[in-house]
Amino acid sequence: MSEPGGPKVSVALMPRKPPRSRVTKLGAATLQQLGDRISTCQERAEQCREAAASEVDERVRQQLLDLEQHWQQLAESYQYVESLERLLLDQRPLPPEVDKLPKDYPPE
Image (cartoon, rainbow, N blue to C red; front, side, top):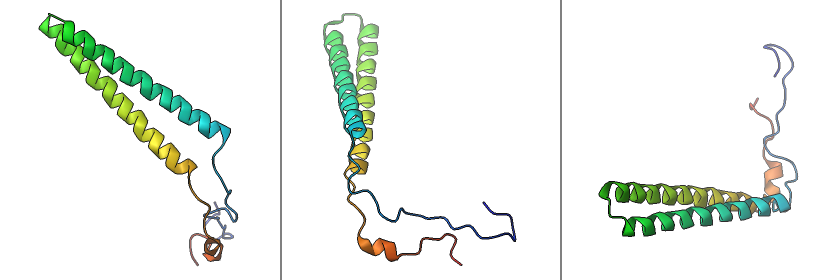
């Protein structure tokens, strides 16, 4: 940043030419990892539910049901992250009109 009274510094808000596609091998790998984690969490939740169904001790059964809920919530969190990742990877290039917008901030 510049000192007060010094030269003004221009900051580009958006790249001039956005990439055509943001899908990369890294992005696909990240989505695969998220899918694997979601599946694992769902499997663990199911295991807890099954174990709770056959548990005779009420306290242990309730703990297993609580664990099931935690695994389900974690799976839902990963699903949310996955949806955001897909949204970011599927972004279309900005229209050419964006290049006509002011690029400097703050406006003079």
